[in-house]
Image 1: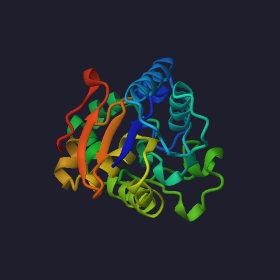
Image 2: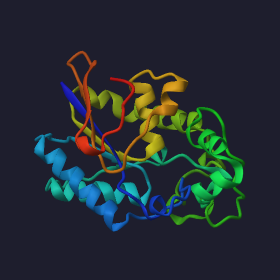
Image 3: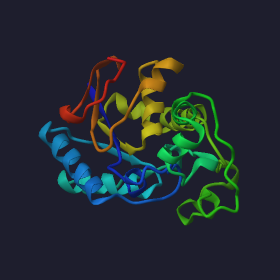
Image 4: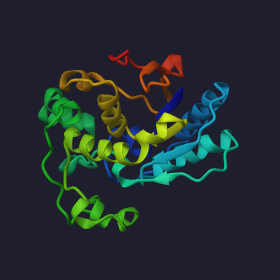
Length: 237
């Protein structure tokens, strides 16, 4: 038996401002830090011993994981992988979601946010928000850095990394991944075999650990959010 813990980072500064964030490397709000601390407390209450930790390259996910590890009194290093980054929102990056809903309509914004294979227009490579111009990504091969992404694009990079680096470790170990709404949605689509309609309905709350328990035959036998008051409908279990 093994356990996979998926944690979307705590509230970020751009979550608070309702901006399309994507690959912009913003940090946590004070509330986001509190969410991360509570996530650590909830994990600790279940007495789950984590063998391996993973995160994206992004500050908000890294700092969420560091806070969780502090609560767990855990000194293990963690693996940072750009493949676990949030989806790149292209030309929407930095824009306010509410203002865009008024400008182009809620339905159109929902398509950009939740559809499977629709990409926003590309972000100009001269923009300060483009990953090419963000220091955190300087070591990523330039041809791997996107100008925009659909959820399918995000899924492809996340699942390739998961299958190559994480899946086999899950057979005998407990693993925690601190990542993002769309990278976690991609993992859930794969793990639960969700179709393209189901994945559009899946919401991932910030700072709420999702516990997925596997049998010795690597079958999912339990899936639940630890913070029941902030749990979302899993549509899968």
